[in-house]
Image (cartoon, rainbow, N blue to C red; front, side, top):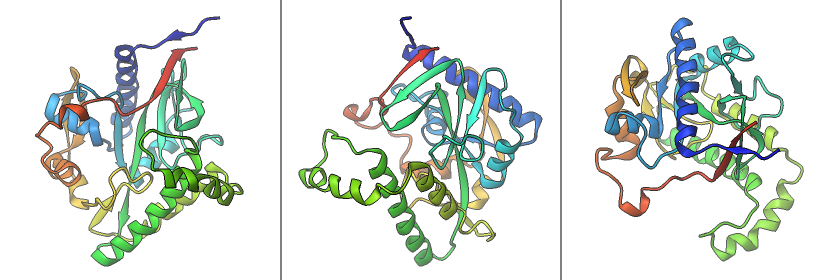
Length: 268
């Protein structure tokens, strides 16, 4: 049977449906979440998707993240959540809510699930600047090893010395499974979970290295418009976006205005 491919517009519609399911569940169960990363930037600057973007991210403080994972049903309105806690095949240190009627093949993820949205926990990190930088360097080492493990392929723009180094890295990392490496990243992200620090960061993937936020940024949440819907975001989203992007109101150069994912999606 021929696969029915999912267009970009259809993919965004599915993502919005998934986000609506998560939003409704969080409201009903008093779970605080926020749009994050490019989705928060899109809401603030475009009241929806960044025109050249193709994904949705949400962020939750670790306690809210764990509450969501532990209470979300196995399936709700065709939406499932894959995480290290809920899916023995999942091999990322963050979670993904996905439409189980679809499939998506991502170049960076061997475990194939459906069209989804990324769910990132926000963790406590050291207040002391020196300790924070030491922690982040070690965390990034774990993350870089993980990335090497899952991306043993030739990529445009990679330097020749990295190509030469790939076989040695592959040999060193051979005994380690991707899932176990993700579990180690998660454990490291939880290192300061017992500390009521004044700073937090997204440590499960660390999309923006050496970026941390005042914990108070996550104290208050408001509704924001996103593609004719109302979803939640941290009230102090300006500080959040400025920490990540600097002058977030300024559009990037035209050559940077392009999707950054490589995938194919279809209906089952």
